[in-house]
Image 1 (cartoon, rainbow, N blue to C red):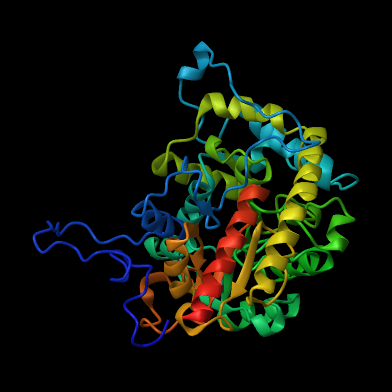
Image 2 (tube, rainbow, N blue to C red):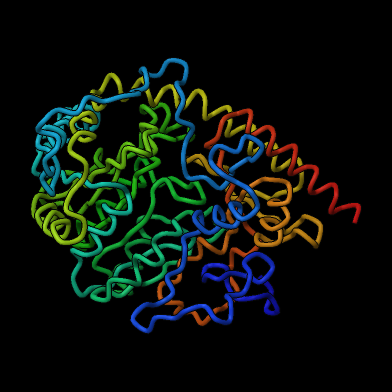
Length: 445
């Protein structure tokens, strides 16, 4: 965004070209602050003003962080109803139903820890009512530390890292020129140089699709172990893997493969049904970590959220067999792999620049810098695409800046956008045709 542009779109009300100015007589309440919307919520809200809804067939939502939920060829049958028994009317335990915690621990042990002496147990698992809830519990359990986080990364981290004042968020820059790579040696320098006690990241990375996997991930965990720096790994896209070497290893990239001692290695894994099992509406997620950390996370949940849904947790346990999980993952690789190729090639064909093809997730992170001047940055393109009923997410939402401590500087990612290939192939194709129309119109103007 240029220095003459309106304020950052992460603050609501947003840019005047999108969000109308607040009415002069709008009430203000001194006890409350203005809370920014995350990127996806912001762009969806702006689309809603123009007629978008989840049932609107004429819209293409490439901003969505949600995979298509219909049955895929080769995948297990979708669960379309659950039975609710008398006991399900009660609260679930804050840490989650024991049977689900056992199922999660067993899944990790059977898929990733065969032949290893240290195994996860139910006491290494806490269940939450959604991914943000899991992250919030972990953040609330942190002490007065320096917490490293990467740029770019998941938009919701910004407010999360600002609202808890015990720890100090320390940004770590990833460079497109280096394909957003970050080695174990790089991590060691950051931890030692900045005094980091923990590092938070999405892996695979949202929005870049970069994966720290294989021996690289083993190296990261070795650094964490050596320096007592906790890795907090958001693995919600860990089954959407496109790197050939990781596909050959089963197509799931998780730190659980490289943890030596489940109760001593400082590794916290966050995952759930949301993306990898394609049940976002269930709001059933989990934290896998050393028992001592799980105790703290569960204690935080007792005052933050009180625990998740009992009937959905009970039903979730049946989804977590190794056979069902591997079948679902194989179906994802087959179908979403096709959509990845279509989105990646389609964006390149119309002039977008892609720093690195996504190694994971269902997003393409692309720059509009070579497009016509009227649409050559993320916010300009987003505004114009809304007129074509296409939703995208501008890149500066991912320039995580807790507390706006960088003084409103122009984002390094103002030229970028995140495009989701979570929708159906038909929607991806329709969106790409509309994007081409948009660019052709801008070229003729």
